[in-house]
Length: 168
Image (tube, rainbow, N blue to C red; front, side, top):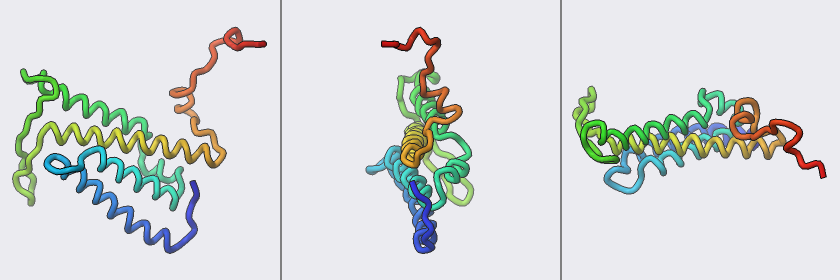
């Protein structure tokens, strides 16, 4: 991807970035009763991060995330699985949902349940996977090795010995 040197793009996108993150949170929270939820909210949030990388570069966006997108996706998967396993731990069924209310200062009673926790996990998985793929494609398009360091050990199979190579 490229870094923008346009002042108009830079100033305009900063506004659009924050508005798109608010839209992602709105879609995430709206998804229990109406269309939306973790998937579409995560997609909007990840897309905003990718477009932010057009402005400041992929390396700076990776630094802003502070965590590897693979780790974000793994944590999201763990959260989604934990919400699905909540039922059997309390004597219910797998993926049985439970609802309750939480008192939030200045807001009041707010409904909270396992569907929201599941959607939070889906949100994190989508953000992690989408940004990981987009950043790897960006690195490959700019001529860099997309699988550097930990990624090379995680995703690339190495040959154990020279015997595995066909010499014909």
